[in-house]
Length: 104
Image (cartoon, rainbow, N blue to C red; front, side, top):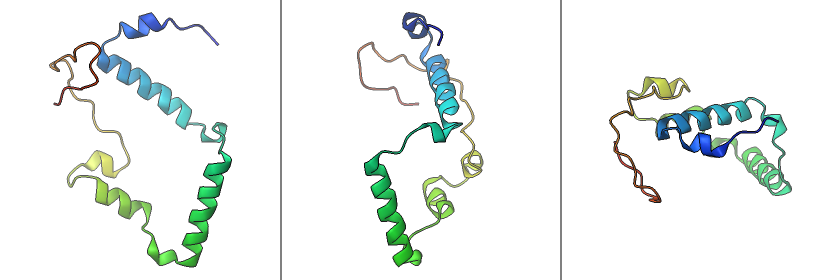
């Protein structure tokens, strides 16, 4: 593994760091089999599967859940795509050390 200087990463703008994190997350998501399932997660999956088999009509499909969460008219999200990148050059910087984020 190559060494990455964290200080260099921290010099990136917030939008650049977000883009980096997205790229890292996407690379992880490309191989979900490399993420082990814990015993607790396996038990929960087994419990949910047993509940589904008892009453398959009680649940909702992914499409139903997704459609209930996505604002009407958000075509990118309804196709499972990431929202389009917005111009972040006009964002107000967050004070260092603050855990509050500026709202658009």
